Length: 307
Image (cartoon, rainbow, N blue to C red; front, side, top):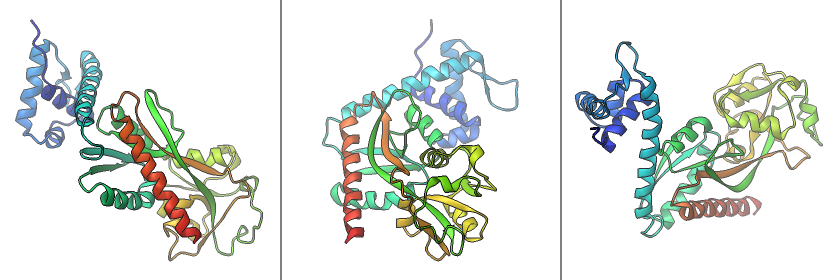
């Protein structure tokens, strides 16, 4: 007779499967390695199958182990949602929320949001994880994150998206470059230029190409960068030009450099900033309120800049 696995055992197993390392998994679960190993052994004994192939030096799942992991992730996510149902019975913003944010948004938008949240909801606890969109989506599906703040659209299933506002994309060039004197800038002028972009995995790269109606074959990419700060330093050294989010420019990311920006004639050269959460989450009303607060913060900021 198979004994039902415990949530703790499933959590131990999924953590080992994700990290592929018993010691690191034990630290992540805040238990000793012996406790974690014992929990996984008990899980295997209860199910009557081997979940981990111990004949290899590197942690590797067996065929049944991979299937169990997929179902275990689903069970753990459903359990988190069950807890959220109970929490949602309380007033909104009285419990904790786990937010995932992409690097091309986090440092420029979060300070405004966090200040407003703390002022309005002092008891609210917001935990933040900054990473690329693909990794954040995996964490969302696994129940490790509740909500994402990212650039849309981003391909995903079983999620709800909420558009918040548009972030204009502007040309960044070094002073004295051929683009410095451009008065009516069009995206067509970007063809055959040395355009500096973020490396694969950053959704800004794809959104820039889409917004500017460019294909990879239309441009020369001398280097790929890991961050906007690196891109800016390369532009400042005349390695090429780039496209930057307006929110980053407004946050003074160009301070102390010789880099200048120019807007495009086409006002649709922009990216959509929004929220994403699991469609089955019971906290959808609360997530929508987060979106309203972010939009409100952006409107206040725009009025300040206009004044």
